[in-house]
Amino acid sequence: MDTKNIIEHFSNLYAGQIDSGKIGLAAIRDEAFARFSALGFPKPKDEEWRFTDISPLLDIPFTQASDVDESGILAQSLDSFWIPDVDGPKIVVANGVLSKGLSQRLNNLPFKISSVYDAKQAKVIAEFVKNSPAADSNGFTALNTSLMRDALFLDVPANTNVREPVQILFLSSGSEKPQAIFPRLIVRIGRNSRMTLIESYASRHESIYFVNGVSDIHIEENASLHHVRLQADSASAFHIGHSFVEQKQDSRYQSCSISIGSRISRHHISAILDGSGAETRLDGLYLGKGEQLLDNHTLIDHKAAHCQSHELYRGVLADKARGVFSGKILVERNAQKTDAIQNNNGLLLSEEARIDSKPQLEIYADDVRCTHGATVGQLDDEALFYLKSRGIGHNTAKGILIYAFAEEALKNIESKPIRTYVDGILNRFFREVNT
Image (cartoon, rainbow, N blue to C red):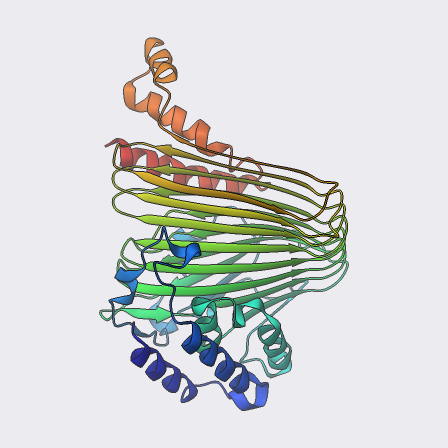
C-alpha cells in the first residue's frame, strides 16, 4: 500500500457518507493524515519494529473496504462467531461500520451504543478521537484516524453494573480484491461501574484483507472493565491493532488478549495508570503455526502512586511460525509504592519456530517493587516421558503439557462460557499441530 494509494483512499472517504464538517472530523482527519504523511509506515531500522517485517503488507495494493449488504447475510450465519451461553448484546461492526441490522439484543440496555452516524453523539465521539493518542502515535494509528469510516462508542453511565458480557464482532466481509478496513472502538466506563467486554476480529471468508484497528478505553474512578480481545482473522489477512487504556483513581482493568489468526499480526496495548490505587492486569496468549508472525507489544505507564500491574504473556509456536513480545513497564517519578510484575514465556514445538522477547523496566521512582522475567524453550522431555510411561499416548501427552503451559495465561478469565470457548480454541490448535 503505497502513499499514492493511501491519498486516493483518503479522498474517496471524504466523498462518502459522513458529513465530516458538522461533527468536526474533517480537521481531525486532515491533521491525522498529515501526521501519517510525515511518519509513513515503520521501517526495519525502527527499534519498535525491528523484529516484525511488514514488507509483505506494503506490497499489496489494498482498496478501501466497501459497504456490507446486510440483506445478503443471515444473522444465523454469524452464530459461530458468538460465544455460546452469553445472553448479552451482540454488536456487529462490518467492514468498519456499525451494523444494527446484524446486531442482536440492543434494546433496553443499561448503557448507550452509538456511532458517528448518530447526530446526538457525533460531536462527543469526535472529541474522543481528537484527544486520543492514536492521532499521532505512529503511522498506523494516524492512518486509522484519517481513514476510519465509523467509530463505535460504548458509554456506560456512572453506578452501573452491566451484568451480561457485551460481545463486539469486527467482521471483515472478504472480497476478490484485497481490502483495507479501519475499525475504531471507544469505550467509557463511568464512575463506580463495571462491564465485561469481548472484542473479536474474524471473517466469513478466507481472503486477503488488512485490518488497521484502534480501541480507546477510558475507565473512570472506582470503575472496572474485564476485556477479552480475540484476533481470529483469516490466515491470509494482516492485522495491526492498537489499544489505548486510560485509568483513573482506584479503577481496575483486566485484559486477556488472544491472537490466533492472520499472516502477520501485531497488537500494541498501552495502559496508563493515571490515578492512585489503580490496578492493571494484562494477560496474553498467542498461538502460531505455518509461517505466521504474531507480535505483541505492551506498555504499562505508572503515573500515580500506590498502583499495581501484573502481566503474563505466553506463546506457543509450531512449524516456521514467529513470535515477538516486547513489554515495557514505565514508573514515573511520582509513582511511589508501585508494585509491578511482568512475565513472558514462549514454547517452541519445532526447531524452526522462533520467538524474540524484549522485557523492559524504566524506573524513575525509588520506593517501588518491580520484577520481570522471560523464558523461551521446548517441551520438557522428562515430563513427556513421565506421562508416556503412565500409558498416555505421545500426542495426548504433548497436548496435556501444551495446555498446562497455555492455561496459565487464561486462568483469570472470570466468565465460565468465555473460558469454555477459549478452551475450545486451544484444543483445535493442539489437534492441528499434532496431525
